[in-house]
Length: 330
Image (tube, rainbow, N blue to C red; front, top):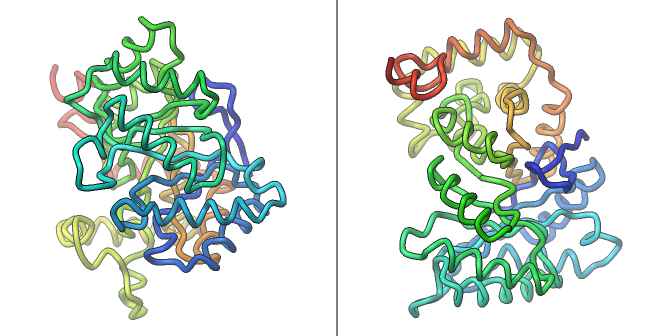
């Protein structure tokens, strides 16, 4: 496994991030524990979750599964860089969601109880809160930091100007601010390259792509359809993209064959080649899925392959080969 620094922090994290969203709804607790053990065996130390995962309001099902895994001992907690999130609705009463100082305090304590740990390595805002001032957010977070309950802070689904707002507010308080941003980023959805990724690079914020396979679209969907396998890309946003660009996906899968690689690993490797990317989140439902993703770290894409991928999945904007604002202006 390869490691890198999380943004401008001194924290070393694996270049693949173990996403746990499937733990509970799709993967049993026993299998979830086995996947986490297997991840450690292969050097993955960066685990990502959220208080809403498990999708039973207020229960924190996935965090509880991870907490019981930590409780088994064997250095599991000590070896793990633990990231969780707050913002989503955890109850029916007011102040049981978003980023008020009150919810920050309550949500952090609840996650710590479920996770059976006394600190969170990376505490992330799952979404921007347009109703709470940054002074209040950073005040709430600074208390957690002083209490030793949280070490680093991150964001998810922020626009570039939100990152700038957050960092300038943190700077005024002489606070480290954000060290990471989780964004939708993959070959088929490159919008973050216009504003989010440049802002993250400028502020030393590590980008953590979620949905690196775009709901399975980039994971060999056409091959799997031919083989009669059930694929996630048969519905939702990925299905619409597939319908509109079947020829492009066909060419992409052919390129993967020419490279002697699985399409999913080409998509992951491409992200690992992008400046400013810490590592994509992989969300294995089985150990076999995890094993398949592990080889992506060793897949080096030559300039010809990268150029061909840009042809198939061009950067956003009419002048997408250029940075913003030239990408969409003169």
